Length: 442
Picture 1 (cartoon, rainbow, N blue to C red):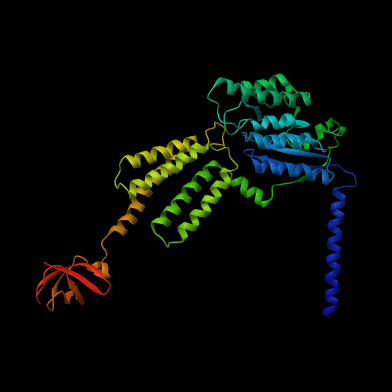
Picture 2 (cartoon, rainbow, N blue to C red):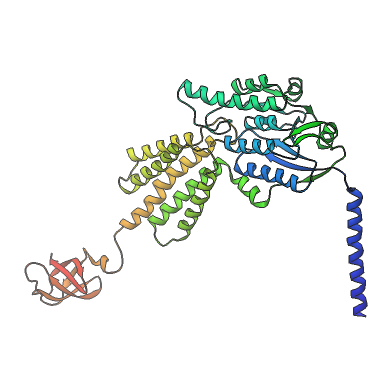
């Protein structure tokens, strides 16, 4: 009976697998086009770069007919942007950049990526442009803002030459692309099509695939005609680790983790043996520097932040009270925080609210918590041998110079400093020498 039940269960399982396979086969006929769909949302950073490069490579290995990158970005790092552009230019599979969803944008580094695409499309209510170098961060250069016109011109001209070459390669409007860099021009979707900045407007992904079907694009290997009408779309999301790191790659998170890490280490040093604050501090600092390593930080500003923390510690430990060290520490902390990521691009700057919260918390932490720990260390001991120092007692025997005294409810062997003391005289404990109390006559 049991064997029969097992056989029936096995046949049912085989039947289910066959039905699933048949359904899959019906939905994707042999030779039907397939498109790999990636989503690049937020700041263009090393995580996004690695993700897109991996997706383009997967499209080639998997035999896909095209790659669609749904793009919505305020900008990002020059190095990451150039890596993405290079992977698109070298791709053996057509890459379609689709500014999506409605309300999205391809700003700054996003304009360069769209210009490099074999096909560039936009959803309704999207915009593209604003690629002028802005120092560090979301500009196409990612360099520090230059203090002189010559260096500014150098950075700007480099970006202009790059975007003009990309536009010319894809037969797009190189003159407007240059204005998008020099003048930070930004246009909505339909105007972008009219100006030949992008190729078309599509309401959604199926509409996009139907519109680009039959277009000829130029790959490294030659001209290819797109087969995308009715194509099966395969989502290719970031893996769990990439999603986590991309979510953490936020200047505000890095800034707060840096603060928590410093707090933890300082508290561990002020109160040895607590263990947890020290461990938490090290973990927070490692995460903070890992995130900052993906961002174009100003190291002089980071030094100012750390110097500010050092001044606040000195204010509490060396010169108690709100004074010049405390004010200097807070000022250094604020200035360093403002300059840490001095960019006007959303997503690549520290929020003023985060700076204010950290500054206020730092003042409270150092002026209350750390000072309390310090005062606890300075408080006179109330138990043990050190507590006997300064206590008044009575000589139970003559001290000439040694004898016995009664101090703090206990009988102690004592040695007098100075003239001998008679039994019954009052003495004061000066210090403890091993098991002997050193006293003086009162």
